[in-house]
Length: 156
Image (cartoon, rainbow, N blue to C red; front, side, top):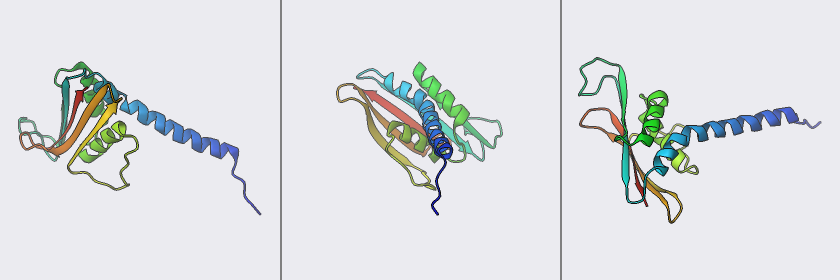
């Protein structure tokens, strides 16, 4: 006896996959807008900082963890900083780097359970004649403590 899969179940699975992909695309929008906003010959950098188990060295308040973001006064970076402040991980800063890399390079995948502690990643976004080189660096921040995620984009 063969079992048939209900068209309703297949439809539900397809809808869940599509909804998940659409949500990921929506989450990537602030990053895409930041990268696309950089003019040819211009460089902009966004730095997102997190710390767990305390507070940044330049802050007196006690804290279990903290986050902050510097968009260098470049208004399109502000939306990306707002996204990080609301949705980022303090405990696993590598997750934030994996999110950025997946948005910039959708075919790049990390195996489940992969932890990133430091990484330097670069890619080009756009066309051969107009786009940006984007450098993503996750590293320890020895100046203020914690971990820094830098997204530096140079337009061409």
